[in-house]
Length: 248
Image 1 (tube, helix red, strand yellow):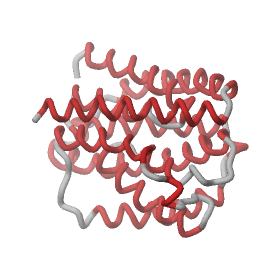
Image 2 (cartoon, one colour):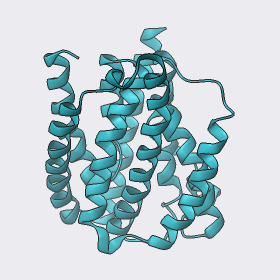
Image 3 (cartoon, rainbow, N blue to C red):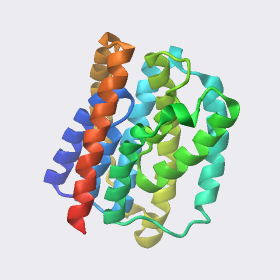
């Protein structure tokens, strides 16, 4: 990995962690798109997983008093089933397919949520969320907008939403690292994994961005939080779909 590529990744990590610190999503999509442009899909998944796991984990730590552990427990059951199901799927996305998936994922915010009647606080919905979100997160690298569908109708504050989503996503990214590390190590050995120093530099930056983003989150109202989140992820999705079309 070149020094220039590493600097781009580190700068993007700081900016996207700040965005995710506010909205609990969107930053990961941008980071994944940048990584795919710089390295292979498998390497991008591992780097993204490592950075996002710590960023989400640190965000969950900062908001630990607001985590709904009951929801997280049932989510874990579904996530386990989801990763088992992926071992029976032979398809893995290339860069063109990944940009397409990344572009479509934010558009999920426009689904008629009132008709879906999803509620993360329901046991069956928490398990189902773990199953489908883990599957999408492992294949596309991100699944924040899909997870958000399960929180829209939940009677939770913005802090509870971000905190609970963060702890579930920390788990999802940990699983993603393991899933995508296997083909890299099998093909070229442990030395082919991303360098340790990249994570050593990226993790403090992700923590800094998350801390700054949390300060903005505390000043926002619940109404503005939802409005800005929807507009932001839609714009990101549109750009990535155009990027996918350009690759074709």
